[in-house]
Image (cartoon, rainbow, N blue to C red; front, side, top):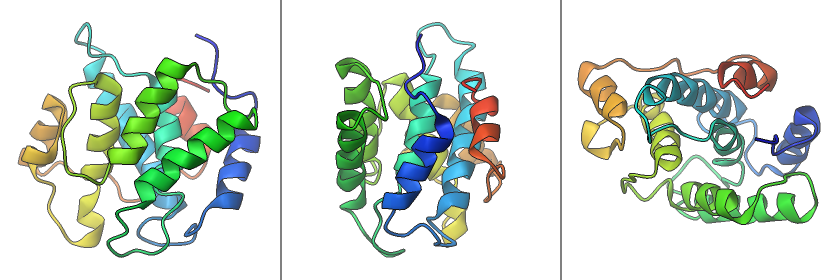
Length: 180
């Protein structure tokens, strides 16, 4: 599969330059990278079940984009739809090369990630679980009933919570996801 981006550093710079709440300690770039690292660990488990393998490039893109358009750390339920618009803008500008089918999956993952719903689509399921397992950063305990994957539910039930801060660089996140 052809990589969806030509230059990861250029893509990250473009997203960070358009971010509306980049420096947040709760929803900022440290959290984004933590979502990417958590998605990588969930994907490693999902890959063992045929038919449940997530698209690892989309996992990285979800991590990068999902909170990029938050306006604050409060209950900003429209940040997911705004992130989906950012995805389309990046495609229109040629910074992301995604076919319509892959873009639709990522669009749904971004748009609906705060709705509390579940998904049986493997990539969306991992995206949402990776973010939801990190809810302990705001004082809530992850709840298995809000996890779409078996592994996400297992980790929530066991209290196996991911690190709140992700790897220091996006290249390291990409390496964890095997899309470097």
